[in-house]
Every structure is written in structure tokens, then in C-alpha cells.
Image 1 (cartoon, rainbow, N blue to C red):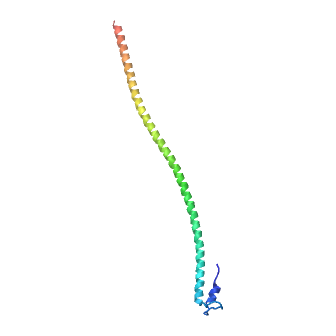
Image 2 (cartoon, one colour; image 1 turned 30 degrees about the vertical axis):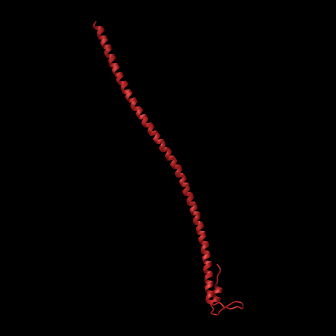
Length: 138
């Protein structure tokens, strides 16, 4: 950063500055101009610093947006897996319900067959006994 101490020191003398080709300028005007130049340089440095800050923030924003995009893609992939699992669970539930219904039907058929077998066994034993008794009595 350049220093304007020489201009400020020269301007602090209360004598008007004159040259052969120029009009005289008061010291207060030179001091005000020097201050404006210094403020302008400070403002220029602030602009550079703010540009650097903006660039840094843009880099951070880009990084965070990339992270968000990555997580969103992962969430989308996870959501597809979840949807697949939900579909598979629904399919397995329907298969279970069908198997339960078929099992109940088979249980009914089994009980009918068991009754028929018991009835047939008792009936055949009864008929055999009756025939045996009939033939024995003659």
C-alpha cells in the first residue's frame, strides 16, 4: 500500500501552491483530494477482498450443491430399493394368503377323508361282524 505522507505533509503548510502554468490550489483542497485517493485505494482493496470472499463462498456453495446432489441420488437409489422391497413384500403377502387359503382347503379335504376312512372302517367292521354272525347262526 502506498503512503501519501509526502502529499499530506506538503499540503499541511498554509501557503497556496502555485506554478507558472497552473492556477493556485488551496492546501485544504489538496488534503481533501489526497484523502479521497486514499479512500479510493482502501475501497479498491475492499473490493478485491470481497471478490475473494465471493469466490470462496461460491466454491463452498458448489461443494455443498454437489454433496446435496450426491445425497439426492443416493436417496433416489435407496428409494428404488425400498420400493422394490415393498413390492416384494406385497407379493409375498399375497402368496402367503393364497397358501393359507389352500392350506385351509386341504385341511377340510383331509378332515372329510378322515371321516370317510373312519366311517368306512367302522362300517366294514360292522358289516363283517354281521356277516360272521349271520353265517355262524346258520
